[in-house]
Image (cartoon, rainbow, N blue to C red; front, side, top):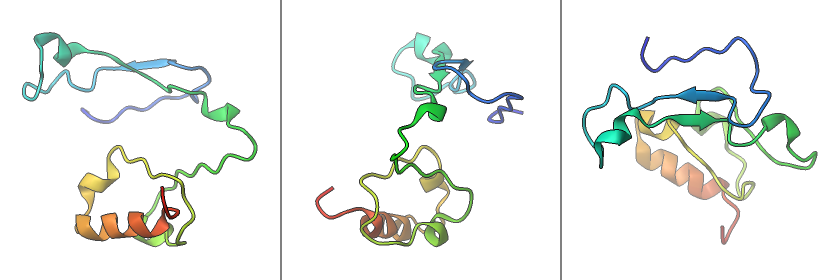
Length: 102
């Protein structure tokens, strides 16, 4: 199935896996070679985060899970925001959970 990647083992090393996410995409390529460009992941080893790192990756409804205001320094999104039924509500929620000045 396109878009579904299952790995039987955890990401133990940096750049352990390679995927070709644009191989079936014929539009929005700047150059012909972009369509077959590989992407390696993870770019960092998630098992060696510092003990005081505030990193969160949670399954669930974003608007219900992340509700504490002024808690996060940044929000990084790869896919979830494009699935929002109301993107304005997501942007407002992100604004609320970010620390002031960030």
